[in-house]
Amino acid sequence: MKKSLTILIILLTTVVTFAQDTPAQATTFGGSADMYYKYDFDNLPGNGKTSFTNSHNSFELGMVSIEASHKMGKAAIFVDLGFGNRAKEFTYNDNTNSFMIKQLNFTYEISDKFKVIAGSFATHLGYELLDAVDNKNYSMSYAFTNGPFFNTGVKAQYTLGKVSFMAGVTNPTDFKTAIEAGSVQKTFIGQVAYVGDSGSVYFNATSGSSNPATSVNKTQFDVVASKKISNKFSLGFNGTYALISDDITSVNDEKWFALIGYATYAPKSNLNLAYRLEYFDASDAVVTLSALGGSSIVGNTLSLNYKVGNLTIIPEARIDLSSKNVFMASNSSPSSSNAYVLLGTTYSF
Image (tube, rainbow, N blue to C red):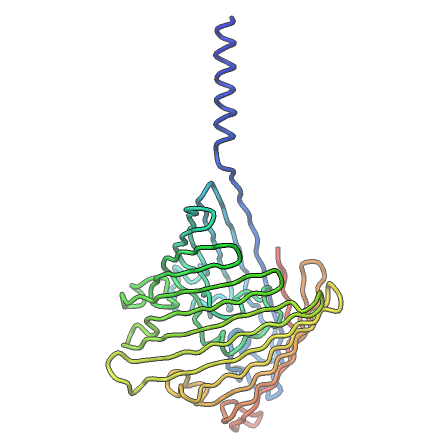
């Protein structure tokens, strides 16, 4: 009897010890959804030149995002699926088997400072994010619209206090598979970041295949900064510069750049006013950005965010002014300006 009791105690102790040594498991689920109504003052759909809001006098469903993540010990997985027109525009190069996968990546933490991430992940460039719920302005900037959107490959990140470093190699930009890209050329990505208590600065870079069907490559440098001035007022900045080169000839060598300022004022916890001012210069990118006709554009966007729990209502007004007639007026004649109002709605869960 005593022998059996001793064996039972040993078995229970072993089980408890094993349970304590087993890494904790945690699975989280979440997501968001958005929709909008837009009225273009020139009464024309497709008059805008930025992503996701090219409609007129129509209620439009944006995107439903479903996210799941799981972590066990040093390994983790993140899955981000998107359904709707916004997701379709974001994964514009993908076929029907993969276009719903916005992000899918695996992480292995070699140490508490160093980790490796493999899979498909949203670009590290730019201030704005794909999901409408993550932005204060519902419509997107010209810099976001002209990418990059995402990369598929492997990257390593090292964090030392408030400073971090990232470097990686991926398939051609905006492709989840080199087979669909029709090219085995690789894109190289990198980032140096500082994240402080009231502000942050990111220096980003990407260089590699831009249009795999040809010999065109793109190198882009990008700076993103944010600063919390007070509990109610914060500022943001994004500067980006892109060089497009041809491996065979320099005839099509082009460049474009953008400077964007963001200001947010929150008089109440559930109410904030967001203003975005963008200067986008495509005067040296006539071929690459043909829709902009070699123009420079000043975009002004004013958005109000009213929160009711997880629901956010976003009335927005926008006017874009171009150096050339790249828009259309109500009489279908070329115009150098475009103005519209929209009402966006987002919900996170």
